[in-house]
Length: 493
Image (tube, rainbow, N blue to C red; front, side, top):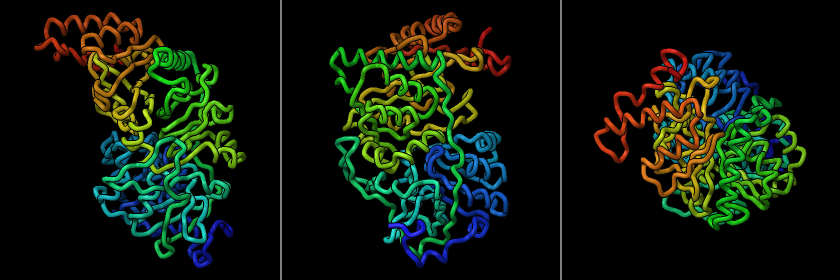
């Protein structure tokens, strides 16, 4: 299938240096780059674009966040004018919050369709990291797919980065499917395959091929601490209770989890909880999930990205034939599509930046004004899941910031899409409750003890001053804790 990673001899004359490929990117262009978290994003060409420093005013579209070699390099070089659709790089975030980059945060399920529909502009180039090119000019993705198929389809020209660290045996792990409007997604089990192994392309569309052997940025996962372990145990208690009550089968339902240390701890905690034959229908698989596959606890993982540490990548690459039987990588408008999420009855587990006493969730902003990362797929899953869980440590900033607040400073997932709130202190099951009943559960079960008196005092004030008693708020003081934090560095009096 491959001959030196390029299955079409005529394309050998397109092989060039990253600098030569970077010269093609001109000021004001719209450029799409592959990548979803730290998996599958190009490195050599973006770094060369940054070094050249000529292509100012770029619009950058990526399926999700990428690494320092892409987002970080271009942001530090001051070349980005507009950015879609999710980011997690400190340099990119800093430029966005300074107002230097116009950032549009999108539900990740919507990104491919926004590309398809032209809402993000005409794409001049797509820069896509891949494992190689088949003899039929099929592009073999890396350990993520995201919106790469849409980038290739709708870009005028494509620059490929062939990464030789990825074994060619990854061919067969992907399920590339174009999800058209008005059609059902025929997935009835997380392991169902409905597409092809490769991204279709035509030789004339490929403008350049650059080889690399860089692994690039990879996440590192700390061992679960006391807080994340307690949150994980509380979520396992929910699962066990749902099974006892007959609301979930013994192997639960397909699981989804957001990216991060707490989500990683939750899946690590499943190992000793006695659950077997689990499945995932998610957007990201992390090291702990791969370990559950290896241990025979997770039977199947459907995802759009494998966001793995360097050790996790080595485990995947060294045992590719085994993992291909248990992992399928889909486009993000399939992995995050409302229809299969609803049909499969997915359990959604996502992390909040803050949660208010009525159950509204802020996932994206610090004190209402500064973007953190973005909404990612949390809205895709929470709104369509069988069970929607939001988790957060009860405090941040060394205890000076309460994650449970009177009113969130930004709403990403409203109370209607939040079934259960979990912190290290406990569980607030909000199903079937009125707004005022939610207040009692969230404060008593989830807030840190240091902040419960403040939250109770606020609620008592709201009961006296609110214009209505369905969802009582005191509009004069609902952000008092936040404004105190901005002034003094602590929400505590």
